[in-house]
Length: 199
Image (cartoon, rainbow, N blue to C red; front, side, top):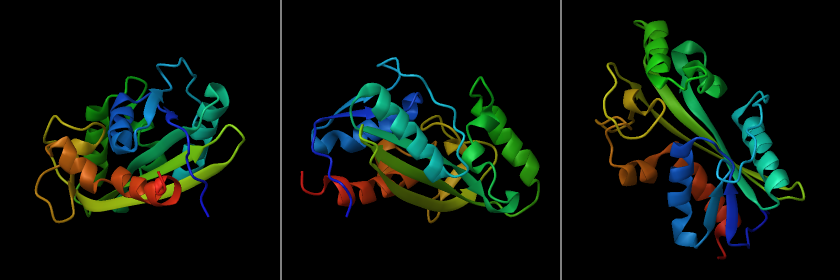
């Protein structure tokens, strides 16, 4: 049985403001005050894991250890079937040190060429406590990649990803719509059921 989150303060262990905003919005109904790792001056750990789960746990543990509070971290990425799952856990690294996702999207398009454009977004949320306990929750949404990129909303690879059954990219969707159907929302629903259900 998952451990319940009982406090009202939580570190969002990410330096990606887009992720911090999405996670904070999802936590709003639970009256949890979120603090970003960046606002607390916490270092960004190297993502040395070999899976979304390993990297999410690593970041959450680092946040909880350094901040002395429960910490929630996300590791997520674009998984492209025809590229053997790439960029996957290296999704952010494909954007380079400048976090240039236009460049990363162009690389995906270039490497796909005329291959199958099926893809999915995967997110794993890790909730860690200062004593070392960690809970993990995975969510995924299937879709298709389009070119050229469409939409200025969202972040990362959102402008080239159309979720299954949709016509707009994640970059075109209203944030509230995206929050409802995204990979992160699906992982978050499992976290709510496991760790926030009795709040």
